[in-house]
Image (cartoon, rainbow, N blue to C red):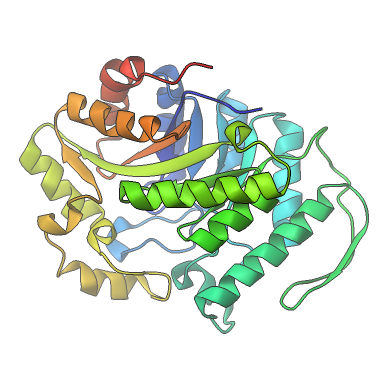
Length: 333
């Protein structure tokens, strides 16, 4: 069943200690946020960001200390994690916190996945690995014994014994038309990031096509978007903290093949405020943030996850709780 009207808090493990993220998630719940999208990284983007805790440990604590829905934004199967381990972890969280966990999956980035020392494949191969992994996870979610021999993923007589009453939904991060259609056909919802309106509309059309081919109603399938913002007391501070704290957000090129935080740090030296235009909303005015979020609600997203790039998380959460979330207009029905 489709959940409408969700403003979610983006918990960024590249930037913050897990104890702080737990505290801020509770504050977010008290301020009107209803879900958490937690990033799944092994490394931060740059060494200066300074953190990268294990998100799966943390989500167990989040479930116990809040009533929020939550999920990964996103976990890449097939490299650091065999999909069987992801299936086991996801089934356990859903068994512990029924109806609250969702599994966000994606194709991954070398920054986090090269650590296991495997060859890092080209994008088409990464997508095939992702789709094979999704098939394995879905089969394990049946609770039956599973064997699988794909081109990239193998599984030998595996069965999940701790099972939820119903499996958690699988949402997939996508930025291209082919993957969007596959997501609509094979998964329960879609995750994307801010982009030009015409590209977003194209992705949603392909998602709907895939859903209808699988005899599903796309209107009942969640559409999630993660938006990066820089909220601060002044416009100048909002711009400065974007460049300082989240320089990767101003890098207008594909980043999936870059391996090390130090490489991103070197590129960060070339990033200027202008690079963030149309990529990160930098503003001290809550009304501008409201207009920004409303735009994506109007484009058809029913779950909007907001990441404030600055260290001023408490101020951001308070401002959104008072000036943004209550004023959003959601579609009827």
